[in-house]
Image (cartoon, rainbow, N blue to C red; front, side, top):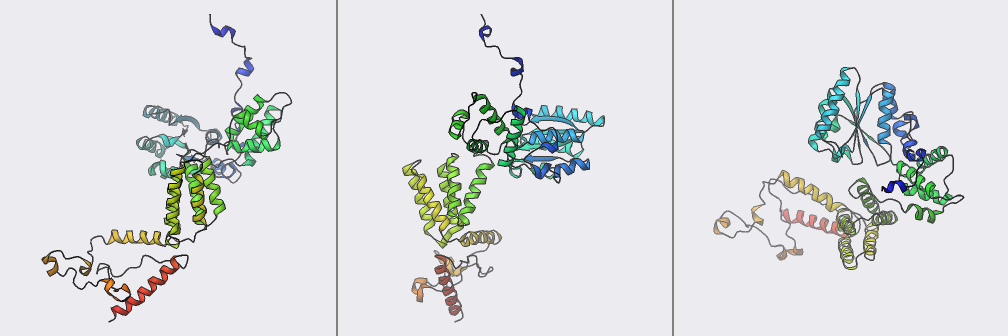
Length: 438
């Protein structure tokens, strides 16, 4: 006998009820919230609709910011046929079918807006397949991606489409979504003011997520019950979501950390470091980035910076998590409070360019060894002066290839330890001029 006979009966109106996020989808561009820079009165999308001319676009932004909804609304307001595919589930055969349908519609005088979700998942050849149908007007392509288009999409595709950035919802727009949800459900969320703020944080800028969380709260609440922050966390079993280390959140936070260190702000640097720890970032990755900051932004202004960062990385290896995280935090604060110099960094880049441009030039013969009689007869090592035998252990010889002449790549600033290095270089420059005039 089937167990279905004993299953509880679910009223049809409940079983067929659509999720709150689906029921609250905007019905016009004007109803879209959180993307006013695109959909507001002066937004680029509103201007496109008013002009009666849409071009191909790439929608770039985090999940839950309305990319799919806006694409569908655009097709409706512009009177275009709407086709939607996902790069996750579609292949070349699916693309051919969609393109053929679009061609048939065009013959009947109607253009197609083709929305491609997760377009970055298509490989380079698949991305190239869009080019002909974009160029001849068969489709207006609207691709959606959470990844940086500059890295994930073909240059040829990007040259034919305008990239529009969708922003994460802020607390104001998320709050507006909750207000709409309460009006639709005709009841307030059973949350204290503090718990309501916590729920917004849990959504992490995702409009779909905030509505899903609201539904969970309504389902869990008993008659007359109101949840505080602790109760909310217990009910939804969720904290603020961590970023995907393969996506932009990872790069945004490491960029913020690096720039906070470079900007000598230890408090901001510690905040971003703590956020990355909290998000589950690999601590050894953070250790490597701190080492990079030491050599790029502090350099010889404080030579100890590199030593301390390597020591912090070794300390983490020795202590593990969470105890070893303090060593990385200490290195982070040291870097942020150290004198800053990118003189070695810029000097090395300049020297690299010079090396590529003059890579065929031989060093001057006087600094080359002469291990054979032939090389000695050719003048190798002739005239070389051993610096340790010279006054001040400095000969003042020229070491660049003769056709290049002397070059200056390293220009230390008057900061930190490099102040002393600069004095030393100025002293040697003075001696070089004196000794080469003799």
